[in-house]
Length: 113
Length: 113
Image (cartoon, rainbow over all chains, first blue to last red; front, side, top):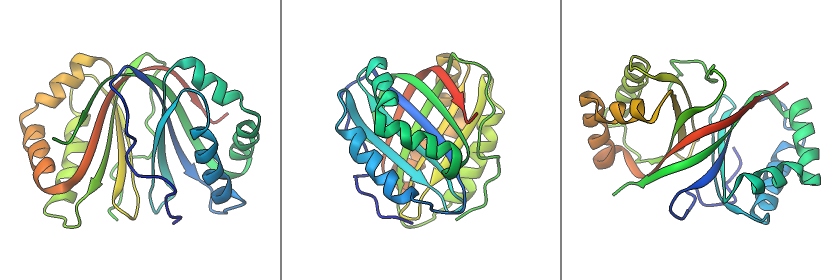
């Protein structure tokens, strides 16, 4: 398992904000996945409207990554980013046996007291 | 790592629906966590308004669980469930070094083509 290049918990402002919930099952081969995954985390953080990201993947290859954004427009812009589009295409072809992507508006948030 | 008692991907209807995004860092000791976690998955699935659940935890103990619900009211009712309240209290005290809980309205959803 790769070391995380970011803190596990995203430090976010008060809601409302937006979440991209990406759940995926990896294929067995790396095929450049690790390098690209790190790069996408780095690139996402440079985008306008990016707020933070949390990610966990289990030993069976099932993972959930949630990225947080100020607006639906910033999510739409990130989806259209050229380098990200190459990663999305390679993901569909090589890296993910299956994935689900859900876009949501965060209404409330709580932390451990 | 425990075997999953459910399929990794939740099979959901078309949005809108609601998501509880729970990210957490486990403490090192089990202290009944595994048994209770399985029981909460089972109990959640019996609640009115429950749609599905996805969960991944990495080797470092950081995990994300997203449960999906038909309404904010069903989420509120689940939070107040007596057996779940005991689990929440034990979670705060024994199982989680930290957690973040975010409640969101899912607006759009896509699957791998």
